[in-house]
Image (tube, rainbow, N blue to C red; front, side, top):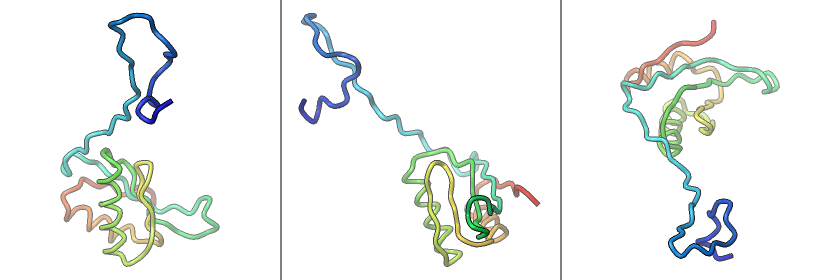
Length: 114
């Protein structure tokens, strides 16, 4: 099978001359404007050997935009972290600082947890 045919769905062969193959398209979600995003910021220790991370949840948009926001937060806090699956993890307890940064950027934020 050629590279361009890898996305075919459930069809092996058709005798219909007017048949067109359906292909699986990965649909990229469109990024909402900053003022319509509602981001939840919390501290998490579960499954992390007692280490604290700041967790930002609720981002709706493309992976590229999520990674860009994660990069901004990590650089402002001066620490490492990751951005995937609609969540941003920043190493350490930076909840208040991240809330302030996100509000300055124009995002709606909610402090989650104690």
